[in-house]
Length: 248
Image 1: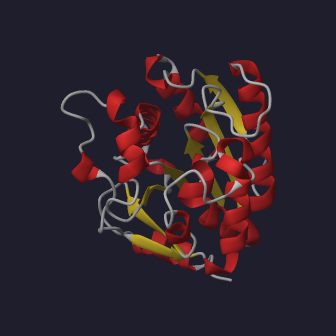
Image 2: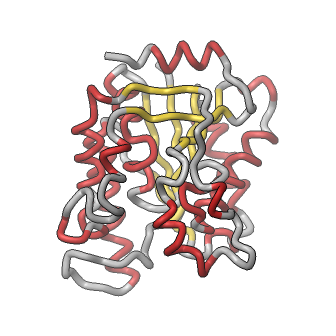
């Protein structure tokens, strides 16, 4: 059985980034595991439910469990690192390494160099996973992938994070998204599953609308294909064939 291991900073990062690929892999019989680094307890709640970090973290964990169930993945694992301060956790990289070694995945996926829109937690998890992967034994095999979003698609969200990115901002606006990628996965067969995965994170969606968190048109651009960069910097034909095998 092939295995896919996904690392996300917060609940809902799986749904926008690579939920279609997860759903296709699960339908193809893969074992899919999502590891969530924080519980997203500082997130803004839009459903009128109780606030406070404990309540928000609990409901967001429940929403991720629902999303993973819809996608066909195993129940998610949570590392319970502090939302908004993930980079301050000294044990982060070693925790990631241990999970990769135990799960022995054919594919590992996490957010890329731009963190989708530059959120510091996203970038910290990217660095941890990349470092853990690079430090592993050559005999481990497998491939590390980063999702690639259309250039500038998440610039509005980058603007919202701008105050957290330093001066000059890191990453800069021109680094958000890319036109270059190594692999493309057609997810049209599971587009409604991906949309349902987004909708599962209801507390984060104004009005409960799956398209409500981002500006109009963003979500619709995420429902047909998912593109990935290979962490090695080059296309691997064996990985391309593995991803192509996910087509229904």
